[in-house]
Length: 137
Image (cartoon, rainbow, N blue to C red):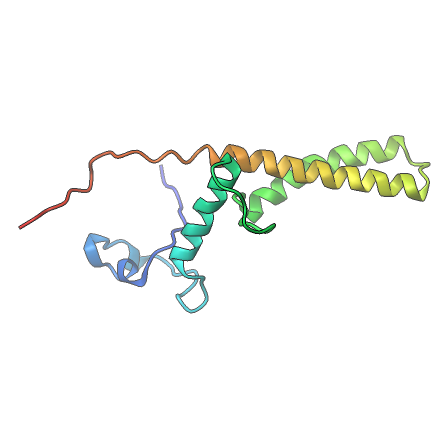
């Protein structure tokens, strides 16, 4: 069973330090100059989870999406096929009706993505499993 993963690592780990000897043999997708700072990405992700779970209020209207762009694109055909069926049934719409229909589909798209984000937010449940020990001299 062979799987492929994409990881976000610091250069130190990618160089094979701390026992991670497999990483130097793997292709580097983006270097440090082209990537956002890792700690900022992690903070934004967990802040978004807190907002979605209702533990924190959003400070701005904008927030990081929990759904990757590729998964969003997979969700869109589901809506597009439903929209095409509805358009076939109602092909004699006036322009205001068409605007209302577009608005409804945009709302449906947004709700589908929000629902999926809430499901994704519930997948994060860290536990202490005891693998990391504090060693004192």
